[in-house]
Amino acid sequence: MLNRLSVSVAFVERNFALIRRYLGWEIVFISYSVANALAIGFIGVRFGSETVLYLIIGAMVWGFLSLLFHEVSESVAWERWEGTIEYTFMAPVPRIVHLLGTASFAVIYGVLRSLLLLGVLALTFGLIIPVRSLLIVALILFSSGLSFIGMGLIAAVLPLLSPEKGAPATHIFEALLLLISGVYYETDVLPPILRFLSQFSPATYTIRALRAVILSGAGISDLYPTILLLLIVGLIMIPIGNFIFMLAENHARRSGKLKRGG
Image (cartoon, rainbow, N blue to C red; front, side, top):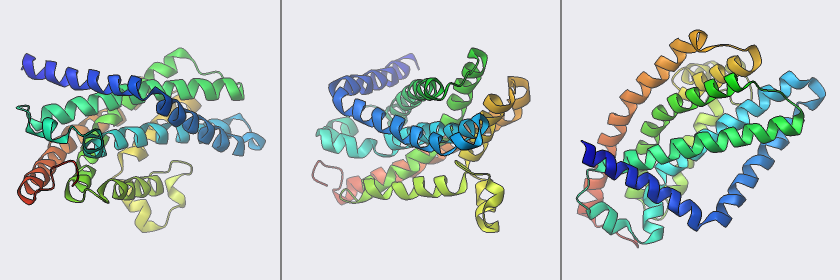
């Protein structure tokens, strides 16, 4: 057990090393996230600080979830691009250990980047967010991250099955979540079918919880049911995602798609 944990930690360290290696690109991605969130926040300036907060919470959460989703779902594409896919997938390491290491990095890095983004937005718009609220925000993001790890594992199947077009196809999942989860609007404005689907998106509950914390000052006791729900969904989705990924990996091995050139 300790050996597997140390291997997962090694994958976390490896991904942080890749961040340092491609630091220039990472600065570009962070700058884009900040600029995008600022542009969305400025839409609400004429309507008051509460509207600004409402919008930038959506932008922050979406930045976190898309980062986490990309890191997990595109892990196969990254391995292929780095030229290490054969070494990683042929190593005597259980696939769940490898994937959980990658996912743990995504959650840790995503929370840190989201708090940085929230701080920049708060300074830009002159907003005051208590430290207590920031700690609750981090807890909610960690909890929601588990459920998106499972969804990311399912999406990671696409680059395995289609080396050429699988990675771009993962954006279909992301677009659907953006549409139904009430990122920039309440879900009650959606058509009935989309409103029904929004009940099954973890992002819906994450965004509602964060808005309750920052806009209404809700505490952990108020959000306990939501946090528990997110954790339960995560514990269900991760094994399902891992099972589906393993089926796809076995198919990729048999069909010869598990290689650098696809």
